[in-house]
Length: 68
Image (cartoon, rainbow, N blue to C red; front, top):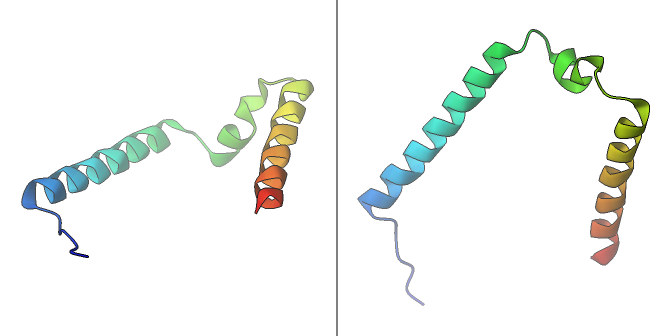
């Protein structure tokens, strides 16, 4: 089977995508004061929102591991 290599335009689009992604990450991280505000949502969520989020994360990972 013949493997087709990426053309110049493909590489340009791929590099531009990653540069834009990095730029958005740097911009978003500069707006945060500290890491705990991201983890704790600046203490604006109630306990049941956090609990359902944690439960959903665990349930998805368990079913994913169980399926394989």
